[in-house]
Image (cartoon, rainbow, N blue to C red):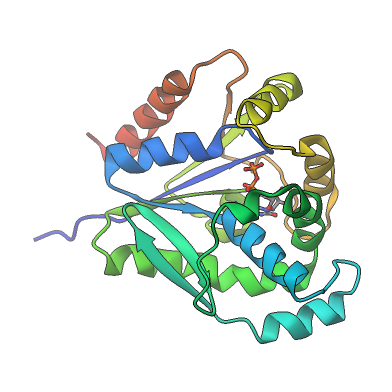
Length: 222
Ligand code: CDP
């Protein structure tokens, strides 16, 4: 009997481009594990700030990271990072984390720390009986899973993205984060060659999800 295939969907895009809502909906429709890698960078940022480490001191960052033990808990269809038994909550969406996360994320030592952990989410998904995963972030289709079955790049105008974040009630420097994420040397935010760009400025969430779902079905041959 042919083994059923394991599907990997990569969803990248700038801040507040709709990655999380879209990825969650796709995980529901197709029974995929949802992996929000932004929450990993946020959790690591929170932990480093708590330890008093600043992003302009990479060697202190490296020493602190060497002591952190990341694990994964699957809750429903979502992968949640745990660090030394702590499961991050709303604190990782705070203004302080928003202000610092892209600075830590620009450091090669931080990206190295999370590289294998992120790739290892495919094993987590298999162990928990998922038929694949949908992973969202900035470099999923370019660095983490460049051979993903489907790579999506979500875009939206700055005004639309700022309005979405404000509607969520969060204080967020989305333009500054985009600037840092696009300009960093290691794994910058780019639409990788071969990825499918979707501009959601004038689309509703369900229209975006339907477009992605059509692409997923064509990969599955259903
Ligand atoms: O929710 P939002 O799109 O605003 O951001 P996020 O996905 O929670 O990511 C927070 C920050 O983590 C980003 O601004 C990036 O600096 C960093 N990040 C990254 O560098 N690479 C990823 N794969 C995911 C997030």
